[in-house]
Length: 155
Image (cartoon, rainbow, N blue to C red; front, side):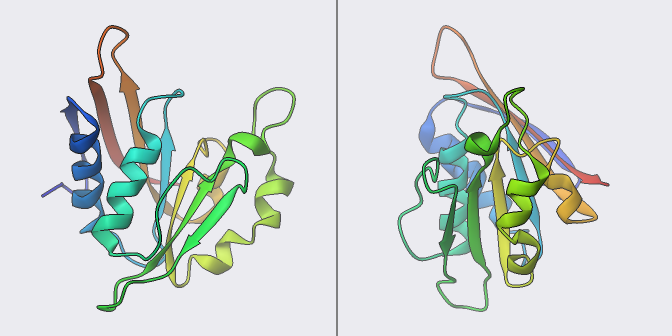
């Protein structure tokens, strides 16, 4: 089980990344915002697949890069649904996601019934809630081993 305050873990393979997501999901509830930070290939979508599995959401969880946001309905048992957002394509010329584009997704409305997971959302999505879970993922250059550090951050 994970600690609501935060933690860190080495993730030797994709299955470990997904397992961490399932553990994090055990403490998530409707209204929670999860922001994933990390370079391409760091495991953001794998972690989101695990969160989706832990929440028991419906539908295949895959990168929403080209559609920007994908909604996954609750699978029942009074668990929330999940909104999976990839803010990478919302970036302006400087590489920063714009507030107007994020506002157009109307995520603050979705937060009432869902957990919102935002890849590439650091520096923009935090303003959606008073507190969010920030997960930083990194991958070793010479292996598939990833490292995760997470913490709940008040804004």
